[in-house]
Length: 127
Image (cartoon, rainbow, N blue to C red; front, side):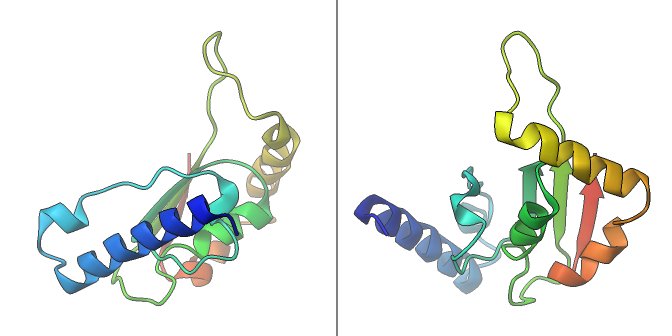
């Protein structure tokens, strides 16, 4: 693991511990981590809510593992969404096929949000 990644993960974990120690203080509870897929696997992070660009089912399950990981939150949510491509916004080329497959699986009922609830003890929203 690179030194920069180690330092960044240490700062994130410290911030999460501060929130656990003082959950009613907005300074520690009202913040957002914006990250790449590098935090999907192999890191012990747990958030109340996760938002992600639609990709693969495996990616969705990995993100679910970063939300309410230790059931420390009463209610948790994972939101998966599809971006609308424009002249100024291009979709991630690696997500185009996998997100279409996942979208089709949801549409055909082969995977439902309820199937994913048990993964992180909360709700899954597909928008």
